[in-house]
Image (cartoon, rainbow, N blue to C red; front, side):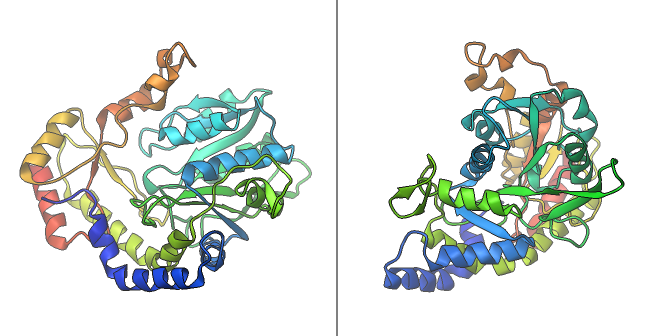
Length: 383
């Protein structure tokens, strides 16, 4: 059986270093917000080409804390609207709701599964204050277009990068400050980019438990989030804000420090497998994902579409290939958003619904063998 994702095999090469790191943490006797977290925050900020990284409990908290941080800074207010793709994992939307903001759902592009910038303007109202872009499946959203619209309409941009560790535009890291022509005084304006990452074990950079981080160039935001993640405290027993307990664990930070230097190499393997899938899978019943062969996609997932998904998934399972569905039910159709709550169940997003009805994720990971890739290609071409 070709597993969809063999986490034991992925982490096996690091076992000796993990054991050493564990002993180091145990010997220090400092288990919360110690040297390992500080080191990882520095290392990951440098990797991303950003000024600040704040380790938090998980990817959802990273998103929530960005929004709550901007509320504390007075740049957002409860009840403001945030444009977000309808085609996303529900966590993107839950983060907006948790911060007492209002999600405004927008259709994606069918080819990329990501937010369609051409539809943003028609959703902007006087209450719109932010855009949450999601880099779904490891592919960057069209940030040049999104940032340009944000600057022209004075909107905050937040990026859900939970699946996009290491994705970058051209030769540059995907985090930084984007400069665009404002169209008003022939000057340059900048929009700080704020990314939320998850280190859930199955991510391209995965811990051995939950973990997350905020990466930003906004010094004010970074300072507030550092307090918010730790009960709103800047100094022990002195609470400046109503905060939460969401701190990256010292042991998980130590493990992430071990794995981070290999992230690019592992992403390269993922992209090599994706290139083979794209060039060698030839079946008219299967729609392959879009990729322009740039570094903007790190293939956290390789997601195909087919009209008869259940049939194909069963066929592959019988042949010894495990697959998964990301995701079977779109957020607006979830029971959590029933008519008794938000009423979203009655909304219609045809492109989003088509995607969720047809997508199937194939095995792709840095530990897949050439023979396994050969086998997946061969079986899919037989379907």
